Structures are given as C-alpha cells and as structure tokens.
Length: 610
Image (cartoon, rainbow, N blue to C red; front, side):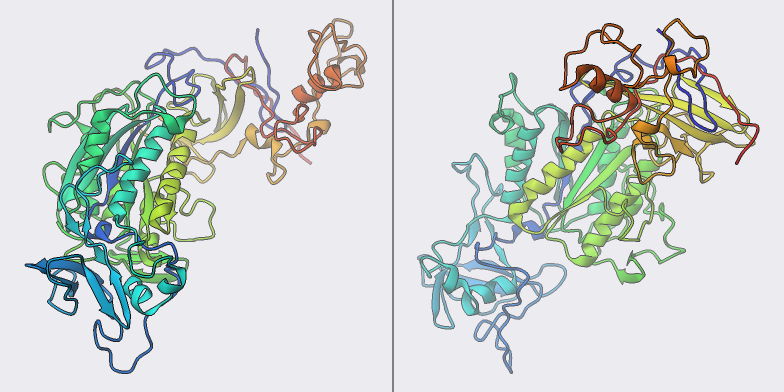
C-alpha cells in the first residue's frame, strides 16, 4: 500500500528512489538498544581525588566548618590546608599530613596516635577514631575499595566538621566508630556495578582508568550474565567484569586528555592489540563517558597509542577566542583548574573524536560521542567538563548556560552517594539515542525541488505505531545538503549530522511552541470512499462528522470509550487513548505523523502567497 503525505505550503509528497543499503536491515529496523547496543567506554578518573574518604551523613559540604580564629595553628585550633590531608603511618605512629603542593607531596605535621593500636586523635576536646586505610579485600557487597591498602585523604572542611563542627550533634557514638571507612573510588565502583546491572545488556561496556597513565581495565563487551533477571537490579554481572572493576587501583595523577585519546585508539584500530570487540552494524553508536572531578594532571603529552596521535592541538579553535586553558560561563572567563603539569586539552580531544570517522573496522561513518560525569566538581571544573561534553556532541564551545543544549550531555554527582544516579542518567540518555529520527545515512526516501531537498525518516517502535518525520533541508551550489543555517547537514560520506537543523520538520506539527504547529482538530485530512471524485467533498472528509466513516470501514475498532471516534481522532493526531495519562484526550499526541517508509512523493509549489 502506498501512503501519501501533503505538507502545507511547500511540501506535498516525497519521491521514492530505490537505493542499495550499505549494510543489512538491522540499522533500518532497529527499534531499541537491544537491536544495536551502543559501545560505551568509561574513563574513570582514579587519580588522587578518588582516595578521599566518604564523609559522615551529617556532613554538609555547602557549610564552611573552618573555625574563625586569629592565629591559625594547624591541627590545634583548626585545619587550614586547602589541598587537604593524608593519613601517614611511620612505625607505630600515624600522622595527618598536609598535602603541600600540586604534586601531592606531604609534610610531617600534627597527628600522633597511640602507639601500636588504633588510630585515635584527641583534638579540641574530642577523641575520635579516624579510618586510616581503604580496604584491599572484597567486602560483603562484593566490592574491593582499592587494589592495595591506600591511606585515606581528608579535606580540611571535613576534618573541621569532625573536630570543630557538628559531628557530635549528628553522631550516635561521638567517637568516630560510626564514620564511613570507604573512599570515593569504592563508591564509583559500586555505581558502575549498579549501572551495568540496570542496563541489562542494552549496551556493551569497556573501562579505562589511571595508574598515573591511562590503563585498560575492561574490554568492550556485554557484562551481564544471561538469562536476565525480571528485576534489572538483580542481574548477575560476569565474573570477569566484576574482577576487572574491583582490581582497579588509584594512582596519583589524572591525565584526562590522554585518557580520552586512548579511548579514541581503542575504537580506531586493532593495530595496538587492544581492539578485540566487533561492531555489530555500521549504525552502531560509540560513546566515551569521562567520570572525573575535572581537574587534570600529568602526563602532559600524547603518544603513538593516542587518537589523535599528533601533539595536543587546538581542535576546538578556542585559542583565538577565550584562549587555551580558559573556560567561559556566560560572559565570565576563568582559568581551567589543573594540578601538576595538567593540560586543558580534554575538550579538544572530544572535539576531534566527534568530528572524525574513528572506527576503521566497518564501512560508513562512526564518530565518537563524549559524555561527562562530574564527581564533586567545582564550578570551574564542572564548566570544563560541560564544555567537553558540548564539544563531544557537536555543540562546540557553547558557553551560554541558558541554552537548552548547554551541558545536555553532562551529569553531576555532588556527593559520592550520587555517582550511581548520575551514571544511570547518563546511560539512559545514551540509550535514548539508539533509535532516533537522525538516520545513519541520508535516507533513500527523498526528493529535490529547486534549492531544497525533502527527507523522510521513520522511527521503529515496539508497538503498532511507527513514528515518522519529513524534513526540509537546502541544497547549495555544489548540490550538497545544508541545514537552515547553511551548515553542512551531512558528513563527507553521506551520514547525517546530529546537529543539522532543518527548515522545518513534520515532527513539530504536534508542538504548540513551533511555527508550523497544527492542532489535530484543524487538520485537513481526506479519504476516498468511492462516491465522489472531488477529494475535498464533505463525503471524503476524514472526521468524526462524516457518517460514511462507519465502524466497519475502520475495521470495527473496540478500544476506547467511543471506539469509532477515538480511532478517527487518533489518526488525526489526538491523544485519544491518553498515552500521557493526563486525562486529556483532545490534545495533540507527542508526535502525530506516522512512518514515511513506503511513500510516493510529489512536490507541490504554491504560485501565490498571502
């Protein structure tokens, strides 16, 4: 059966041209991530920031617990070192030593414990047992905090909370025995396990982390055992994946840009001996997810295992604008925070990976999208991560925080407990992009008229209704497809760009905020019932007022309170079956056009305009 679309003002119908598909039908009829699961490579920042201890539940990081004193006496009337402190053991003594520079060096200072026994501190009249080491054994939750016993790091504000602030008001024991004894790395591992279970093999996962330099921890593959559990939270992870995550150790540095470039090489080629995954289809999407506080530190260069393999370059072109090493939030420009010899090219690498065809193992165009998850990031490091995600999804150097696209692919975890929610939210965003109206290649259903081209897309869904979208793009003097801004709408190999903006799209008919919105009740829709050849005759109107549209002609519908009227109005675009459950069945559905896979196009051009 052929279906005809008449688009008001300019577009009538699209001409069907038959073309050979560049791969199998998997990409055309993919409905969900179950059909073409995306590849997701996590880059977990396991630098020194992850060695900080998880705070007591009564601690509020938004409150400054630093005592207001005249002369600051470290460890006596407060803790004042902004870089924090680390537990240090020497013989039978323990010290809280300040981290004195960006190289994470320590100096000897206040904090002698009782000889030989537990780590007990008496400061400001409070005697507390402070947890000292992250465990290197798997606990009852199946999680190993660190590969080897690593001393915990403490922020000055947390120590002031414990010894000078409100800890005694929130503690049930007041002696430190109720303090959490796990690090941020522990919580990150726990979050990765939760995310992987919830994903239920709708994505393949790989994992990189830092042992001062980027290190592969997990190859890209499915990580959940089958059969899947009815409750995703009860899925069982593969023992290989669990062991690989648990065996990650923390290091000192956070070479974020180099880490992302190593992920590029993981996708780019098998020549380095790393790439043992198989892409399932040319339309399979590839993602990097950077999980970090957003403060880079050495090493400060790329190497032959990097993609790109060239020296760090200004791929996003901001050096001539705000300047390399800067970040902008609306009209305010700041220095990107770094630690020792840290580079600020993370957002440049994300730009490169988005703008280039990275995997070489399959035909077609496959770039790499970069998501970011900020773990207790500051305002400036959060902006740096947000810009990385902007650049890694085609919104290059978008600094306007009020723009709806700003930070759309960045997620925040303001506490260790929030890491899991942030990862799951990021993963849900990735999965939602698996089946979209953005075709992997320019669709075969298309026609050109003058300086414009009309493209028909469809989105397969698991139900009976497949959504459709017809879009209008331009053609430049070189017969290349461009969007309404004159920017290229396709990549050189014909793949559609996610950022291409059409002149209009029928998916906007249902949206009252769009200029081409139309209410379902005002649409001119006609049929032919065999009695009157004048298509616009009353007998051919497709509306509930046409008594010739009998239930029998409509297939004897049974759904809804008024099955005949419900079906007619549904076809016209009404939310007849209350899909959004707001009790309004006369409003437009979220999308009112069906799929445009089998159509016979024609272009209707108006000779007169109002």
